[in-house]
Length: 142
Image 1 (cartoon, rainbow, N blue to C red):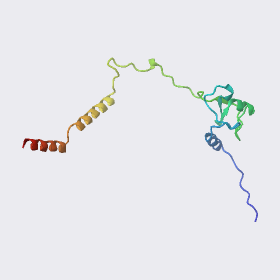
Image 2 (cartoon, rainbow, N blue to C red; image 1 turned 90 degrees about the horizontal axis):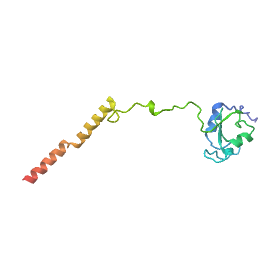
Image 3 (tube, helix red, strand yellow; image 1 turned 180 degrees about the horizontal axis):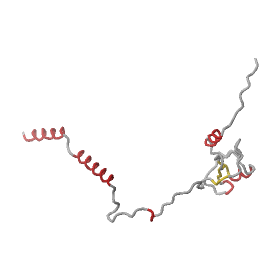
Image 4 (tube, helix red, strand yellow; image 1 turned 45 degrees about the vertical axis):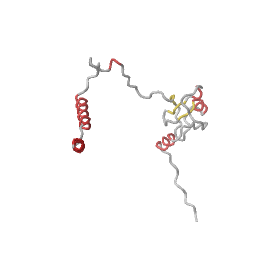
């Protein structure tokens, strides 16, 4: 009986990204990539194409390119650097508080009033409690 040949394996970009998210180990030395290190050589870097973590020295020893099958990208970024613009808020951008503190919005006022009513309703004795108290008072009197 002849063996059936399996179809060729194809690796997609999604396969590469999924595999990279499963491990935080450098693909060159297989050691964990740590964020807070004293040596510049052990500084974590990330492939700009597929997002694989490396030690900086391992990236350079690997020929200055990504070692992931099918990537071979030649640019990296230092792990933790901002990739997009960062929203910065200054104190002058915030609204000034009212003289007596923060001015609540109308919806906040409504919610606070509803909450106050609910707390008051919980503090008031219910019908059974009032009836029980009345019976106890009648027993004490009689």
